[in-house]
Image 1: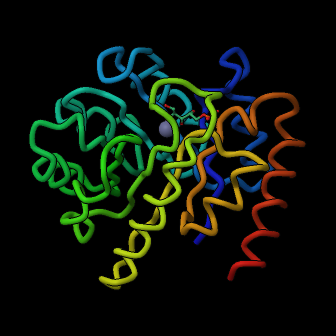
Image 2: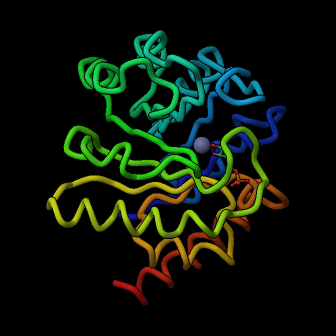
Length: 223
Ligand code: DX5
Ligand code: ZN
């Protein structure tokens, strides 16, 4: 399963509902939702009220990426406001195993994420406990940054571990995905591609059509 996961961090919040409708019309199934607390990352984005409000209008899969210190404090709240999956950062949790259990118990899909400097080794013992691994390909905190080439190896490494253990775990990449980097991350083994500025900058409808076409073409080539 491959998905393009537009990140609403780059949306025009004055037209958020309208832009979500465009994504749905273009066949987007996953919506990436970046929550930032100004502590784990320097910036602050948005939280529960925004998610709750768009949940009423959308049937898409809400993929909530928590860039938040001690996210275990908020799991319930994000599930209640409509998350379908919750991804936490390995670096942000007091007790990562317990946090993952908490997400599982709350009845949604579980993701773990690592920043560019964190080795895959730090989470490799937990692959059987999660649904998704998110490899950050920029420093978390802001949209519109350049893809960090040194992260490609980590995508390969995590995909190889998943295959070696014969697990059903998705590999998501986040940061700097565009025409130039899409082939690299797909070839390395990512199947969920987050895209912020690539789709929201300029004409959203046109960009999504283009991005999906590009992605399909590469997948046909590598599959
Ligand atoms: C960065 C966020 C990303 C961001 C990606 O901290 O996690 O999801 O929106 O933006 P682009 O695609 O513009 O790099
Ligand atoms: Zn994200």
